[in-house]
Length: 87
Image (cartoon, rainbow, N blue to C red):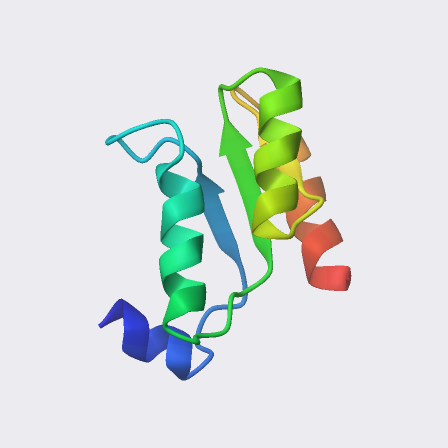
């Protein structure tokens, strides 16, 4: 289902938490799986409670400059969302 929706380009934006529950890099693994399938990756905002340097490195690995350290405000999230959608 997710694969088909990605293939059809139905997502305008992805908000990705790096820690999806199974480890600190699960978000990166998800992005790599999407890419391995040859599916388009929507503009992405990365969220994490990781230290800023690790968060920035993970965001670069995903290919986005938009990342926020949790907790963040809705204003900060909205600003990051606008930034990736305007790129």
